[in-house]
Length: 111
Image 1 (cartoon, rainbow, N blue to C red):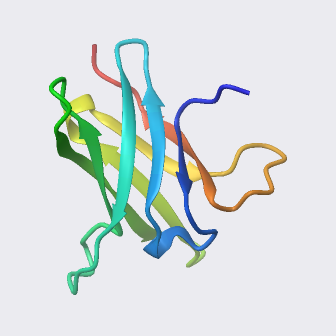
Image 2 (cartoon, rainbow, N blue to C red):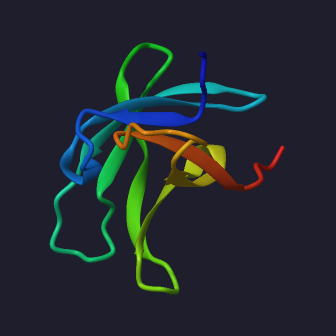
């Protein structure tokens, strides 16, 4: 199966794990690299996201943040500002692999 909009982390408990994935839209495809980010700032991301420039340089393009839902449970959001791309991380239907996170877009892109 050829899937898009995902991050495959190296560990099931992905908060401290590296990951690789992809975001695809009608206008662009970006291969992602997620690297854990440790900070004492409670508003800091859990991961920094990197992509490759056309010349092959690794550049920071966004991040992943841990948040609390109304019931107090944890969830994760992803943002790539240059693409105006915002999403939640979650699971695909019938998915058992906890290290695979679907990227579920929640804000439409501006054209």
